[in-house]
Image (cartoon, rainbow, N blue to C red):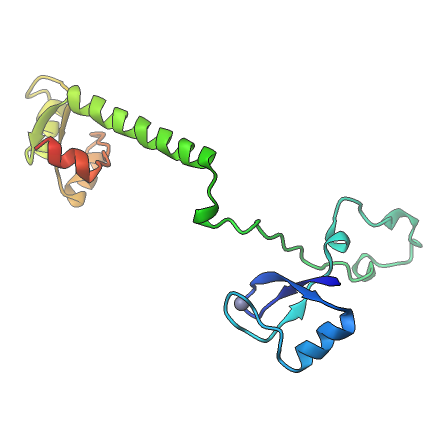
Length: 174
Ligand SMILES: [Zn+2]
């Protein structure tokens, strides 16, 4: 049994199992080797993994000094590393926990902002300007404004920050 690292024309990398090298060449010639991801039959063989191990640098020092660097075995093969098929379904429970924690923190943060800010709604830009120019008391506000208005505020030196809100929270708080 021979395990080969193969690659299709769309750069999908996969393993092919063959009885022998000749077996592979034969199947390839008859168009029987196809990419499991896209069905492409333009398959090329990758260098086997051990040869791609770049841990040891070629012993360039031992080369005769007359050897030009460009002719060093033509060893400029690009290395391609493939992630171990990271499909969403293969997500570990630990990964899910981390995601949940992040979502939890984010919800907490949003709730905190909500609890400590005054909702000025569509008057956001107006109130932010009044505060900036000392026409009204400085306080923490939140509200809605158009992206154009937000840019205008930033250009006037008024710092605003987008607050990405989960749809669920939006509904319960209105
Ligand atoms: Zn493919």
